[in-house]
Length: 352
Ligand SMILES: *[C@@H]1O[C@H](CO)[C@@H](O)[C@H](O)[C@H]1NC(C)=O
Ligand SMILES: *[C@@H]1O[C@H](CO)[C@@H](O)[C@H](O)[C@H]1NC(C)=O
Ligand SMILES: *[C@@H]1O[C@H](CO)[C@@H](O)[C@H](O)[C@H]1NC(C)=O
Ligand SMILES: *[C@@H]1O[C@H](CO)[C@@H](O)[C@H](O)[C@H]1NC(C)=O
Ligand SMILES: *[C@@H]1O[C@H](CO)[C@@H](O)[C@H](O)[C@H]1NC(C)=O
Ligand SMILES: *[C@@H]1O[C@H](CO)[C@@H](O)[C@H](O)[C@H]1NC(C)=O
Ligand SMILES: *[C@@H]1O[C@H](CO)[C@@H](O)[C@H](O)[C@H]1NC(C)=O
Image (spheres, rainbow, N blue to C red):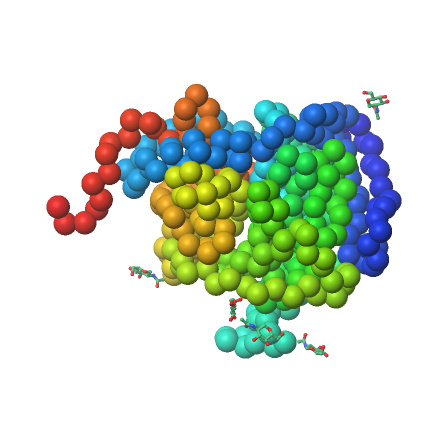
């Protein structure tokens, strides 16, 4: 540890029950600021129309060129989401599991869920562009039942996260995290597991995706949430696509190409059986959850994980669509891929 500094910051908030739900314990590895002093615009949302246009040229035969592989220093636990803030900071949401969840049995459901709570900590880890660790924050207290930090989004001011029980159909807390301090602020409590969130800054809505991204629950920021820990009620919108389960999504905007509808970009995987895992990326209508474009990606990490497992961020560099993936647990490598612009035209794989 370069500096050995360990700071415990007292959380200051007007929201009651704070102490029981969120805690901040930051281990500092480099004595540098976590985020640029002047927070930059999010890469995904500031390249919306270009990303949508470049995405429309992708297909099954797209050639993906590896731009860079960056080993991330230290234990990354289970990385769930990533946002790149400026050109030399990566923020990674991750779950540390100190005891495993255990399935009740085959198709056994107790109190609406199928396994024990397990235990662990929700993390937010900051890395520089060389993969060197800057800080590791635990956002939950020892013994907290909600410790799974899911997919994240960055809106130019805050990082949005859902910290949930690590089992389906349970509970989650929507938080926003200050990139300068890593300090979390609790927004609301929801009676479902939520595994990811995006902030539609035009409608000022937070859209949370539950276990397997089967449902979306939307909170409009002008609606007052129920006081924590009471649950804010939602009308969940069913996701009609079973092609992949979305894991990490970024708000793109309301692009012209899709009639100004709110669109997010999502990566994900699904296991169809114990040997077949498919991965891909999709543009998804935030309001209806209908995918408007989707493309499989069959690349694996050097350790064998589908490249689209969990964290994904996106940008455009010199007119090329560039993805950032962090698929492996514990010992993670950032994989940066660009879509080859002159990939062969896609005829499809069916009978010709
Ligand atoms: C803070 O985090 C470190 C590293 O995860 C851990 O060892 C320590 O026990 C934590 N301290 C508190 C007060 O939670
Ligand atoms: C960190 O850097 C600041 C100035 O950049 C300095 O004032 C402070 O003493 C440093 N802290 C440690 C622990 O080195
Ligand atoms: C189910 O909920 C009841 C009532 O809250 C509780 O007493 C019981 O321990 C729960 N069962 C399990 C297995 O968590
Ligand atoms: C979720 O759990 C509640 C009880 O806690 C139950 O009423 C509901 O049917 C469950 N929903 C699903 C989709 O399993
Ligand atoms: C999704 O939401 C619908 C209501 O729109 C509900 O009936 C269903 O049980 C939910 N499914 C899951 C898996 O949460
Ligand atoms: C998975 O599905 C494939 C294709 O249907 C099949 O060949 C394979 O045997 C299946 N594996 C298992 C473990 O069921
Ligand atoms: C991570 O993987 C690299 C490359 O395989 C290896 O050199 C390194 O020792 C591993 N680190 C840990 C902490 O396992």
